[in-house]
Amino acid sequence: MCGNAYDETALIEAIPRDSIMEREPELLKLAFANMPGILVKEADVLIVNEMGKNYSGTGVDPNISGTWSTEFGKGGLKVKRTCFLDLTDCSHGNANGMGLADIITARLFDKLDPEVIYPNCFTSTVLRSGMMPLLSLRTKKPYRPASVLRIRLTGITAGSSGSRIPFIWVRLCCLSPIIKTL
Image (cartoon, rainbow, N blue to C red; front, side, top):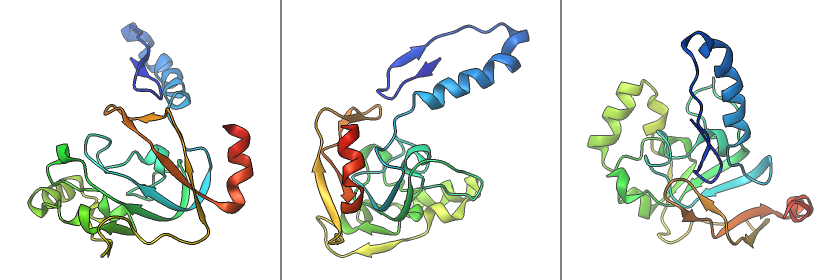
């Protein structure tokens, strides 16, 4: 079974046992081709509205966000700084992956449960995921660089939660390539 960028089934295929090793790499290519993505390849700042175990084991999908917990992962957005604003309620305080951010908000911090986060880090052997990033003392929004422009998008959804993506932040020098793709 292979999904698409809208969390829908793209392909269901039964593979005979003797063909698995041959067919599996082809299906993996199809899965990567159907993944969602971000409109640009590089950014100064990535602001993630909410992270959560319902999205990925590290709270955000590293294939899209580029926030990898090990040096062995690659792909996704190349970003200089990352900020996580909130944690989904269904994560029950498990913000394993917050260590991949440079900044988190007080709103996210207030939802942390170390009794859940730390065992998750120890059993995964990736301690960086549970390390504490800088804390923005502003509860609503982190500090925003002046060289970033907010663009409102409509009709885009993300993940199995079907949550709306209300806007993206784009560096001013990157604006024209994005407008060409919209």
